[in-house]
Image 1 (cartoon, helix red, strand yellow):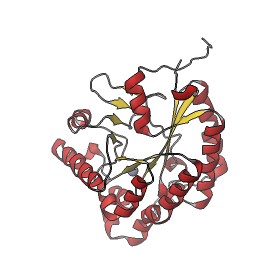
Image 2: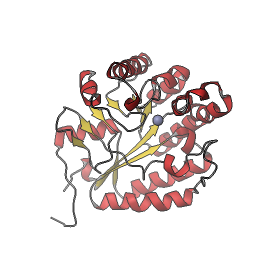
Image 3: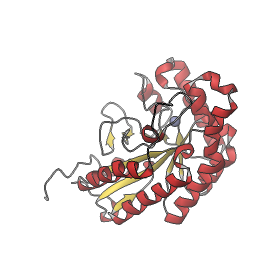
Image 4: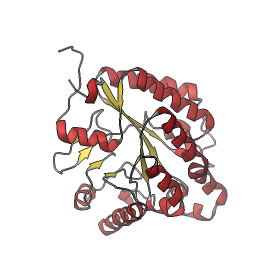
Length: 274
Ligand SMILES: [Zn+2]
């Protein structure tokens, strides 16, 4: 069974995809001249991030923020505040473009420009989360060549693991524990119902309990423009309380990846008490 640090029965990471204006431009380049649409993203750094930083400080948690280079250029003080508060900052593309839409040289340039931008703001960047949680056949090669230590993109486990072909730890994600599938709303999604925080907690908490019972790792993915709304901050606080009450080791993605690197391969507790 998995042995997590300090005798904790499972692990959890609160990750935040910073996604300000750039995610909307990535959705559709025409949005670059649509201030109303872009303002949905601007809510993140203007309101969501300060409130999230306050919540994390009050609860004594360090999280991981995935930031695209162009959003960091627009909101440098927001990124500096995240770093100053002791959180991890990691790479989320330079523009918010899926690598699958890029040629190899373009993908390489996205990685180097994003790294340069985040480092210029003082971030020590070792992790990569693609804007689409998607890879190309070149991505792992490019990540290793650029010195990344972990990726947080694939959806194939509830434990961190080492890529077989590359010296890179994968810290998996899931749509279920992402706020966007439950709450994402835009001017082209009028048919969609915005879920209540109660409904989302009904989805999240049993999944967290299930992962806990298996000794796995909970990767929660939230977006400041989505979960930085007041009602959803209260939801996040409920989740944090639940993680603490049920014995989670709450750590940054980097810490989880480092733990795998030093102690892996990790395995689940599958229905026995050995
Ligand atoms: Zn994103």
